[in-house]
Length: 453
Image (cartoon, rainbow, N blue to C red; front, side):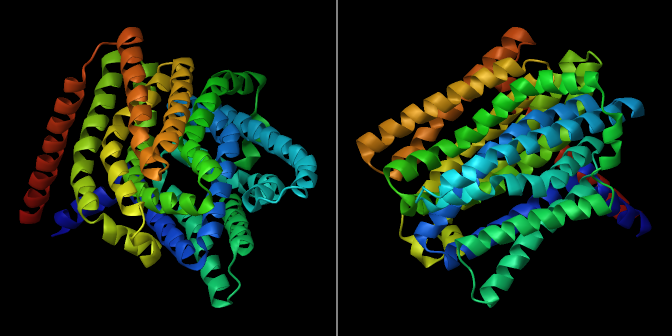
């Protein structure tokens, strides 16, 4: 009995389980939060709030793109002295970027007085406040990911999402909920998370004294490409929103948003395994183990893809009920369920696209990854515009996403084969299938062996 408990305990404390739980719990809270907003905000307000977040996250990519991947790449497997240098240099760059936002926000605030669009007005008035309040929270995420402390990441991100949901429930109870109070709740949640990270010492702000010109320069030289990649990737995910709002209006954007929000459940395992794979990929590359880098990449792509298939099938079958739970009855008889079905099919290609991009960054080819994502953005803009022109429907916009994803897959596959080591898609999926079967058999065998002892 003791050995059985110990086995289960080891599973629960593993980095993969903790990372998956962290992303899963927070994605679940996020879906609940979005469901509440869909019910208590009008379609127009919901569309404006979604657009506001889209623009906010797009601009935040200047910070996250510069620092997130760079931090883990240089931090993983380094000496303690080197790790202190990377933490201090990351803090320094993060502060500089945030201060630039604050300076830009001063004239932007006065510009907002002449703009009538609610989402743009909110952004121009509050974007620097958000980045200032969330800076320690953001840096803590980088550090905890680099340290692979997914238990602390779970607590920190749960605090962020949970406090946002809790504050929203308070505003609903007080009957004060509107797009402005939702914004105040969002800002407050970031402040609470940042204060927690500072109080618990997870932000390591005292290590800013270990910053060096060399560390800053290294992060900058890598970050100047990764920020372009992340900015383009964020713009890629935002392009549909921009085009729908521009040509069809915020109400259509709300319906489209209801259809794609459940894709967050696909992002749960994908983001989790990206977090846990990144340090390992960096270590293999830094040690010169070229074949091990590709082996890890192929294993993760294949395993995640096959693991996602049952979930995709279930969501496709029960899409109407999923939309009913998420957005309420007013979205069930719209295009939202079919939008969800379209994206669930396309999402099976996401693991390969995501890990191709991650591997290009790890093997010092961030420029190619950046060029790849830029081309994906161009393909998305062109296909979205053509879809709206010829169909006048958000169905066309959703279906056009397949061209963007295929573009990323082809370029990533070609670049890795040309500049690193040759492999095929058959290698990826056959390897991943075998690894998944072995993993399931191993855990099944180990569990019942432990149960008998």
